[in-house]
Length: 115
Image 1 (cartoon, helix red, strand yellow):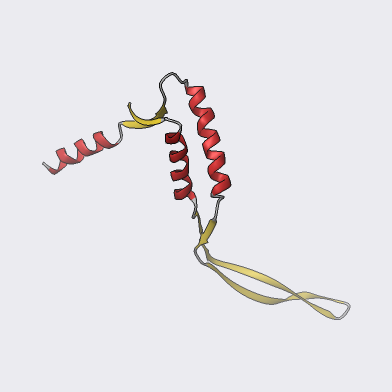
Image 2: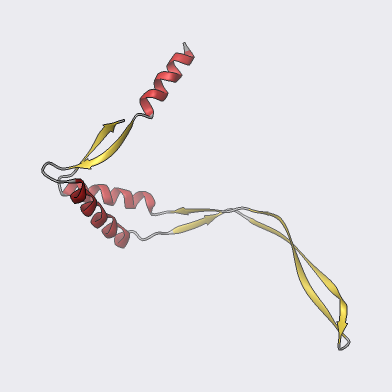
């Protein structure tokens, strides 16, 4: 029974996409308006990239074995334990809302297209 429910849910969730439509307008018109709305939204809500994660480096200073002019040379050696970070645009969600609002204001409708 659980398997049947899982199969039905997966079939229902992955079978459709959405597209903007407006009576009397072509796909070209839709892309033209969508790009205009995206540009306006970028001006109002520019990307605000947030970097998350921690850099972890262990630094060692070693003496160079070669001596030049009786001065010891030093150099840094970086042992990379782990470096991880994620970048997230804090304005991405609000920008998407502005884009949808712009399209709806111009009487475009987001409809489900079954695949």
